[in-house]
Length: 432
RNA sequence: GGAGAGAUGGUCGAGUUGGUUUAAGGCACCGGUCUUGAAAACCGGCGUGGGUUCGCGCCCACCGUGGGUUCGAAUCCCACUCUCUCCGCCA
Image (tube, rainbow, N blue to C red):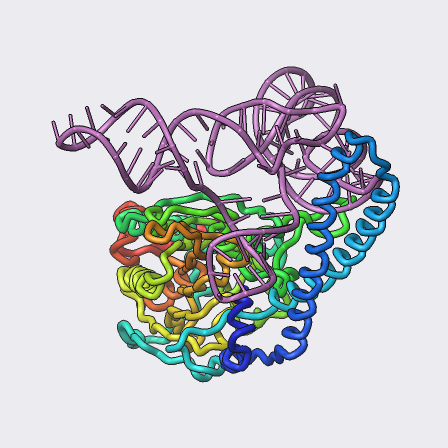
């Protein structure tokens, strides 16, 4: 949510910055309703002041033996008028709130306007491997080496689900362990949050109401709407920890991370071209999160980006880092970097981490503040999140980038301790 | 799933036969006096959001959430959420 004062003071500027995000808006009617809203508040509060004053006087009049029936009748009318104005005000405020809820965040000054086509690669690590043989697709490798069972995964959950098995499951688990170990080294606190959340969580994150139908929803037979949903990313849980709280300045920054599977409907997605596990309904991810002081959040984002990059580099995989243009950042974010890993079979780079600074946008939605020592006033804090990392594209990248001519796969050194020290997997096993 | 108890400011906690309580009081915290310094004692301050004002200030709302009754609700009524206790269920 944006600061309404910003819209009141410089609506043209806000309009222009949102246009960079390809969001067209005109504040004329909004500001007219805002003025009307303030008139109504003035009117109804004056009536309430009168009511309060008279109500306090009534017991004294009674005590003095005066006849209060005329006063009571008059106050009845005042009460009815208050109710009428309060209803009108309530509807007006609902309209204004819905309008505000739909506005995306204002992009940071150094974020360029426009969509994907204006994204800029700012860092490249490694080069595409030169195989010297015809490389296989990760689905073929995974099936041949019995790392992933796609067929039975679909039997259990339908299209878009798979089963990690044997060394495949071990590699997956090794990746998660590797990420966790690195975050702990950097002093981040580990959390395991609920996977089933209430509506408010999606609202605070800025994902609802817009994306409410992109998540798996849970509903009871007798409920009109869903009561809970399954989280699409751990960010949705982590951003709600301190909802409606006021933290101490000394508590910041808070550096956290969580492992959860992520569940997404991905309805109407490009599943045909994204064969295998590039885009599934369930994937594993370790998510980093920071609650930061406003003046420190830019630096915090750089820290998160560097951490995510270091994880991929530790695996020795070729990737590129892109700074996203305004319209390619999600609605809540003022600045986003994506780490994209090289997938040889797709001849393309696919996202394995997205690192973003939401500024105070999510903090406003979730009423998350901190009290500064020097001023003693509550202020909105800043929230940042970064995948660290999502595994569902790392495993394909490992299988494809590290495949050897004999059909086996070389395991990155940092993972070997969770695989019995093995450097190579894929020494043929009997069919099961 | 059933029964009972409860939810009040940072925290503890009074108020719950509706009305001079503007939500008492303690603790914590902040400032001051005193002191060589500290402690103690004493004095003062001490919630959030909104409206209005150049400003001091004034006004409104908030006692788990949302409705209702009433001239007036922390207090009465209804629904819901959460916490605790006991019982049942538990692939």
